[in-house]
Amino acid sequence: MSEKASYDIPTPHGGYHSRGGESESLGLTHTPRRASALNTIVASVALLFILVSQVWSTYWRFKLPPLEHVPSNGSEGVARLPFMGFNTWNAYHCDINESIIVENARLMETLGLLGAGYNYMNIDDCYSEKKRSPEGDIVAHKTRFPSGMKALTNEIHQLGMKAGIYGDSGWFTCQLYPGSFQNELRDARLFQLEWGFDLLKFDNCAVPFDHIIREGIVGKYQRMADAISQVSKEPGKLPMVFSLCQWGREQPWLWGKRFSQSWRTTGDIEPTWRSIASIINQFRNSFITWASDFYGHNDMDILEVGNGALTYEEEKAHFTAWALMKSPLLIGADLASVSKEALEILKNEDVIAINQDPVVGTAISPFRWGINPDWVSNETHPAQYWSDESANGTVFMLLNTLDEPADMFFNLTESPWIRAGRKYSVRDLWSHSENGTAIRNFTAQGVPAHGVIALLLRDAGDEPEALEPPCVRPEWCMDQNGTLIESGVSNSHLDL
Ligand code: GAL
Image 1 (tube, helix red, strand yellow):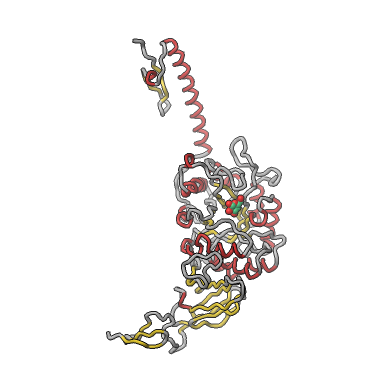
Image 2 (cartoon, protein in one colour; image 1 turned 90 degrees about the horizontal axis):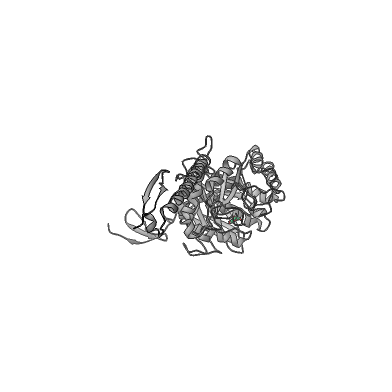
């Protein structure tokens, strides 16, 4: 019986233990002399392997600490309110460079947009080279961003603004620039610590194969959330605002709030009324308004106000819906050529005040669909009658989704936030004027096609005595003596 070879293999802890006679089970047989030569080779290779892996792991321990699974939302105090600013995508797509960004940042200040609250300058896709550096870092595009990203964020910060950058949770961005999959911590450090960005929009393209990613959509985005959280532990850092761009495919309104501050709810916006109406409805934006509150907001996409394709009334309706539904407000127009009207829309303080309400974080919700039956999705005719509480009263939005002017009527108590038996002063958030007092109901006459009415109703005391009918809401209206009053007529009496 020939002697079986024995050889040493490394333990997981870097030591050795001897395993005799395993060659047979591995299908190998050796003579002792060949075995001893083999032993030497195996031992040297193992030693080399241990040495390299220890150097490697020390380097990474130092350079990139392991990810901790920590929710980043809320407690660190970023983006309590919907963020406001500028994003390059709608106006420029990939045609961006550092001058465009600096020029628009300066215009944000000189046009009074920064003063109105728009304080993020966000760079979207296409800012980098197509390949990472030999060390593995994303590299700013050499000819379009020759001064480098740090110089650019310095300039933005000097103007009193914050800076946002873009990345992707897959192998590549949607325009096939480097994505962050498996490089999350490296990229989060680059974006925030080396380049100086304050916000990261994170997209959903170039998804790795299932057998590689072994995560659902939540886990896919959690990777970067953890990296952001970890990087924010560096002294003096807040986490980057994490703005998910997942297009609403897998219900980010259910999970986005765990670790991000906003989540796109729809596919890409276009400068058409059809697109605006469909986003108000699409993926049930009309039905998921409950998901927005402090620190977490449904993101309805970059604004198209000022891009010259919507009518004035459509731009007002678009802006009102986005602001009152508490979407982030990102300007997507070339500010060098933006019209005076568009600028006025973007700077509407009454509407912005609702978006940025420091007391009430929730979004307006429909109380009646109008043309469309209640609670039924309709891309052309989303819900028309909306309301919510606000710090200063009850806010209403009426949308005329028709292609012609229309009168729009509602009873005040159709909104859950209105008290029966009270009258209300009415402020028009577009004319910025007080429009008298509403008692029981309100009619907006001749609302333009695709137009909007935005109102703030404030309690102005008891309604006049003895108004008929005794209840505006006819259902189960009853006298204390048990008489049931329907449509203002007492038509039955219950013997109590
Ligand atoms: C899309 C995203 C757009 C824009 C674009 C860039 O996925 O929805 O807002 O970021 O990618 O390639």
